[in-house]
Length: 255
Ligand SMILES: NC(=O)C1=CN([C@@H]2O[C@H](COP(=O)(O)OP(=O)(O)OC[C@H]3O[C@@H](n4cnc5c(N)ncnc54)[C@H](O)[C@@H]3O)[C@@H](O)[C@H]2O)C=CC1
Ligand SMILES: C[C@]12CC(=O)[C@H]3[C@@H](CCC4=CC(=O)CC[C@@]43C)[C@@H]1CC[C@@H]2C(=O)C=O
View 1 (cartoon, rainbow, N blue to C red):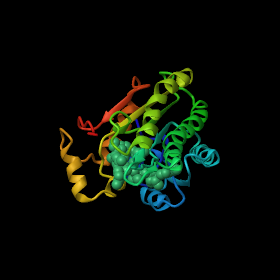
View 2 (cartoon, rainbow, N blue to C red):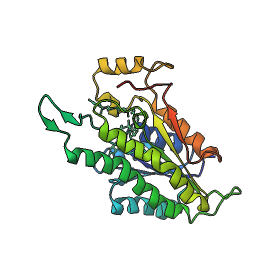
View 3 (cartoon, protein in one colour):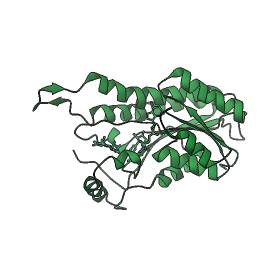
């Protein structure tokens, strides 16, 4: 079912996005791989073959995302599947009482701007092109998959900005499913637990091992391919819509 699908994957140069682009390309899909100009998206796209095109994009920019969606139309004729993986994290307490400093407002705004505004920007512009598709026998014209985090539900110390940004993605999922239902466009959100990606590689080995031990079962970090597998399952199951699915081995993050 993935063969011949035309997709847009943001954050496609690394981690969960890269694994998704790889899985889609391996099964014969076309992929517009969107990531920051500073990323190695161009090399990743070349590695993945002829049907993968890199477009330098900041997801919070209307102009950049319009160009990415236009690339799907110009190169592949349409857009069937959009996967929002671009994201950023920060870890700062709301107020540091030892140093007497408040969380910088710019840091809060930056995380919201990429994770929440960027995700919505990609959804709204993708929907425009998907709406022009010929519907399948079920009336479906397209599918959108977002990436939140378990931090949307169990935000930890220092995650006010990150958790808020991801909770907003969870919050927008149902109303957008309702908004786009008239055109047969489905939308779901994946809330990953802890995955072995460059984002997590930033942590010391000891912390990574400790984090993995906090997962009930399986007691290991998720492999990005397991995220990509769920993206495909969402695409292929016509009844999944408006829902957020935790992919976390029953992890509940501690404070
Ligand atoms: N790795 C994990 O354990 C978890 C990750 N997530 C979320 O999954 C998503 C993917 O994360 P990872 O693959 O782990 O991270 P990653 O850091 O490996 O990949 C994120 C990608 O997003 C791109 N990106 C960042 N800001 C961007 C922007 N403004 N415009 C376009 N691209 C941008 C980066 O260049 C990078 O290639 C993120 O939204 C993250 O918050 C959620 C829960 C757990
Ligand atoms: C985002 C998440 C939880 C975090 O806050 C960390 C992040 C990996 C990079 C980090 C390094 C640090 O030194 C501070 C914490 C953090 C920002 C983690 C990746 C996955 C975690 C998540 O989303 C869980 O749901």
